Amino acid sequence: MAKVVVGLSGGVDSSVAAYLLKQQGYDVLGIYMQNWTDRVGLLKSDCPFEEDRDFAALVARKLGIPFEVVDLSEAYKNSVIDYLFAEYAKGRTPNPDVLCNREIKFAAFWEIARARGAEYVATGHYCRKAEGQVGGKTIYSLLAGCDKGKDQSYFLCQVNQEQLAHALFPIGEMQKAEVRALAKQLGLATAQRKDSYGICFVGKIDLPTFLEQRLEAKRGNIVEIPRELPLPYRDNSLEERAKPYPLTPELGTVVGQHEGAHFYTVGQRKGLGIGGKALPLFVLAVDVQTNTVYVGQGHDHPYLNRNVVFMANEEVHWVNPTKEIVIGEKLPVMARLRYRQPLQVAELYRVEKGCYLVFETPQRGVTPGQFAAWYSGDELLGSAPVFY
Image 1: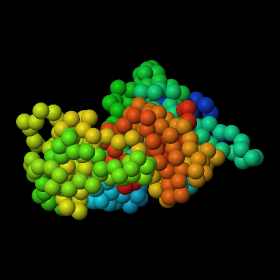
Image 2: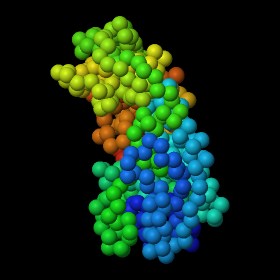
Image 3: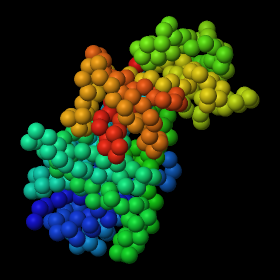
Image 4: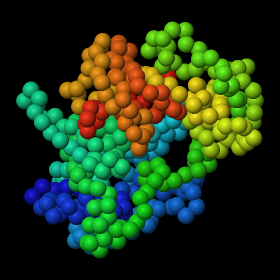
C-alpha cells in the first residue's frame, strides 16, 4: 500500500482529495502547512491561519487519517515572500502562487513527505497528470482540470518532471459542484467553506500596506499619456514590438500624485484616486527609477495593449521537455498571461536569446514579471515570466 501525504489546507478541495485517496487504498497522512502568520496588510476578517488549521484537523478526524502540522514558514519566506518584495521593488508584477507550488508544495513539502516514508504528495488542485514513454523514458504531462472554470494548471506552470513524478491530483477529473456535493454527502466540515483567494497561504491583502513592510512609500507623479500618441515602433520586428514603451513625463500631463510607483501594476484601474475623466484611467507603465506612474484613458488605449511578449532564455521552463522547440522553430499554441484568463491563440517563436509569444489579438495589461504559460490542447507545455 503506497503512502501519500495530502496537503490539507482547510478547504473543501483538499478534503475531498484526501477522501478519494483513502478510498483508492492509499495509506494517507494529512499535513497542514503552516507557512505564514503575519497579519500586516491582511484585509479585515481575513486572518485564516488558525481557522484553516482547525478545519484541516476536523477533516482528518472525520476521515480517520493521521494529521500533523508542519512549519515551513522559513522556506516560504525565503522562496516566496522575498521574491515577491524583490519583484515589486523592480516594478515587476510577480505571481507568488506559481513560486509557492514550485518551491514549497512540490519541493519543501515533498521533503517532509519523503521523510515520513511517502511515495507521493497530493493536493486539491484542479489539474491532471498523464504519463507516457519517449525513447524508453517515462515523461509526465501536466493537463488542465476537467472543470474549465476551475482549472488551476496555470499555478503549476513551473513544476518539473521530478516533481510531477511524485504528485497526485485526485480531483482533477471532477467538477467543483461534484466536489462540494461529495463533501456534503460525507459530512465534511469544509463542505460549505468559501474558496480562498489572495496570496497563497497569506490571504487577501491590501497590497500597499503589505508592501510597506519593506518598500518605502515615496511620493511621485501620475502622468496621463494621450490616446493619440503614436506607438514608437521603428520597425515591425518581434524584438521591437516586445520592447517596453519609452514613456517620459514630457509626453503627457501630470494629473495626480501617488505614494510609490512600486505599489502599482500595469492594467490597474482602482486605487488611482483620479476622477473627472471621459473614460476610466488604467495604469500603462510603472517606472520605479523615476518613481512615475503612467496612466491612460480607456481599456483600448494603444499603450495598454500589445500582442508580442518576450521571455529570456534563462527563464523559459518546459514542463514537458520533449516538446521544447529549437532556435528558428515556431509552434502554434494556446496561451494565457494570468489565471482564469481564457486561453488565447498564439505562436511561440524560439530565437537565440529566448522566446517570443505572438498573440493573434492584443493582450491588455501585459506587465513584466507575470507568467506566460502555453498549451497544446489540454497539456501545459511550458512557461516563463514576461521579460522587458
